[in-house]
Amino acid sequence: MAARRGLNLVGAAGAGLVTSLAAWTALNRAVVRRLNSSSDPIDPADLDLPEDVREHTITMSDGWVVRSLERGPKEGPPVLLLHGITLGAAVWPYQLGALADAGLRVVALDLRGHGQSGRRAAEDGRRSGSAAPTLDRLATDVSEVLDAMELDGVVLVGHSLGGMAALRLLGNEPGLAAGSGRLAGLVLAATTANATHRRGPPGLSDAVVLARPLVSSASGLAARLPGPTLPAHDLAFLLARVTFGERPSSRHVAFTGRLTSDVPVRVSASLLLDVLRFNAEDILDRISVPTGVVVGEKDLVTPPPQSEYLATHIASSELQVLAGCGHMLMLERPDELNRIICRIVERAAG
Image 1: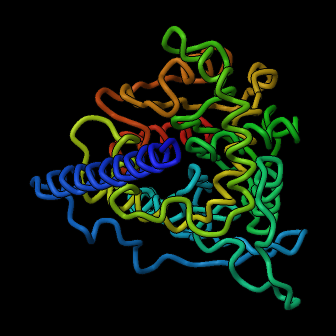
Image 2: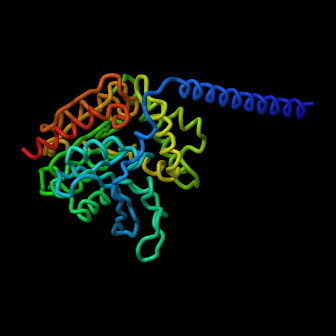
Image 3: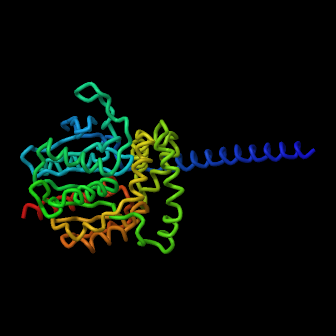
């Protein structure tokens, strides 16, 4: 009798789980349909890369191959765009368009493990991309790209993870922070020097500290798994929606979800482990190049207090908070972000 009751409980629990999953799936699809059915002023062609983009593949010192996209005059002031986690060089269509048209030499990098970086055979025939990336290695990649593409006097634009990679590079090469010949300016977009520092809503940092061992264990396991970061289309769309602010374009959200779904889970999990340990606060007061700090008012990923801290501790910085904007600045507010980048280029030149 007891065994039968146990089986009944297991069966009931299983049925409840199946029902819950079905309800969750139905809710996801309903929300996605509603968002997609709303009027959207964005032309899908706007998200295509310009036809005259030049593509390069660069072999790193450890055999990995990374891809860069370049547009604009070779003699123009160089700008290097570094995207956030689970994105790619393709996330910068508005910058590769407008900034290059303004006379800048714009280069967008597929960070290691993202986009088409690390997925091609190196020149000597070895396969690249077998190991999960780290922030230290991303910083080294950026340094090697600067050398390989001869980007002297560059303005580094780092979004989210890309901003952390830029800060790690400045920590590894202190001369850059002081304005060596290779670095002329810096734009830190929706990023942080320490994601777990006690800043933001009350109780948030304590929750992060308490959850960090669990997240670290889960990320360590995920870093050994095959497959994409987000295999489900609806789930990718809904999670991408969280990274946007008020009234986003459904096409922008879907575009971001597709980029995320293309990144292997071992890549995002490995980098998440590094992000949880990341701390670049000690180098902020050594940065003397012109610096723009920009964040969305509604950013839930790297909330405004993170950027306010950056601006407070970088003496050469200017802070701009974009009203109603979320984490995806380059898509939500491309004109304003482009003006900030151009402002830093002008300050660097002056």
